[in-house]
Image (cartoon, rainbow, N blue to C red; front, side, top):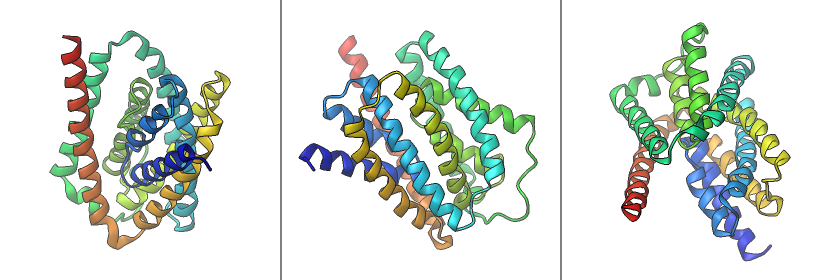
Length: 257
């Protein structure tokens, strides 16, 4: 394997690990693909291989632990997938500045939810999930629209909705998120592949690294004793994501000024 292949495999491992425990692994994998010389569009399309790989590896392990509700997960995934299609069309009419504001605002909301009600994230799941109704359907569709607009940070919202709206705990929430990402990832990969925006030579080692990272993260996330550490890791990733976006955005707009 070439040096570039080794580097993109390592990036895939880090992205798969972070995405499975929290979200935002694309902040690692996308720059790695662009470093190899891929254009923004091809890097974005190729990155879907990472999403599918980490979703598959995570789902397999969580299923073996009995943490995946297939029926509920598929219903949510379909709503998010439909919303993603709508958001993709809306993104054409929004400026970069507006999208940046949406992302940072969204992540600040997630951080507030994490810090304000930690018990909802850490307590064990007791009894059946909350009954699925119009409120949950609207929320997951909206998350899909958001994912179609900007993608970045959508995993945080999926996890937050699974815990705060549907009634999963952190372990079951991460398991369901992995399955949902698998379904939505396959959908988007087919679209990008049809458009010729997937570089398979870079995507295969990226996917392999992502699968290994996701599998190890899933083993950690499925342990009851690890919930507190996963919760803390989630907070750290959200904070770092906000700081990174603020620095990148401020630098970008200062250059344009």
